[in-house]
Amino acid sequence: LLLYVPQLTGGGIALIPDVTTGNYSISILVLLFIGRVVTTLLCFGSGAPGGIFAPMLALGTLFGYAFGASADVLLPTLDIEPGVFAIAGMGALFAATVRAPITGILLVIEMTNNYYLILPLIITCLGAVIVAQLLGGQPIYSQLLHRTLKNDKLRQQDLPENQAS
Image 1 (cartoon, rainbow, N blue to C red):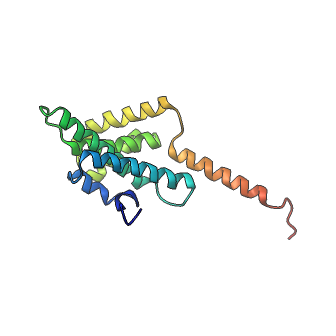
Image 2: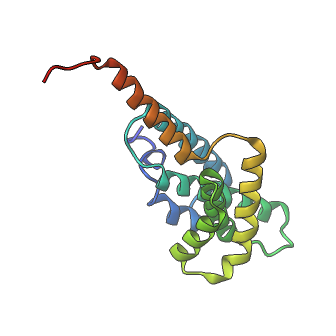
Image 3: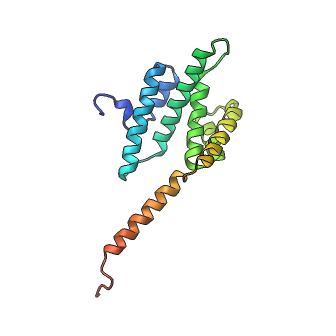
């Protein structure tokens, strides 16, 4: 996979500038998004060590830019900037995944150094967290903690009760 479609592997930090400069068509963005969701879920679900922070930001950027580019095509009379949607998508996915809207807003503003994005980020991050809460589930780091504690408990059960010193 790495040799044929390197954009689907790794953290995705190198992919973010490529996406925001408009190097990909909407259909390619959608395919990249679906492919990265699958590879991220496979890696996360397998329990393999690795980060989820950068892939989460890359997924948000892909979805946001694809949404913004689609809106630009469907509504050509409006002056829509897909890059703003990419940044808002990045913050929204992060905020919804960790259930921390203020952290998502501040993180993206700090990363982009663009304070003009505060209002779109507030709207998307709060909206994403509300939708995530309504859909249920747990924040990603709570799931990771639960998995770690469960695995540790299983390992402790494998140990003998009393070990002679």
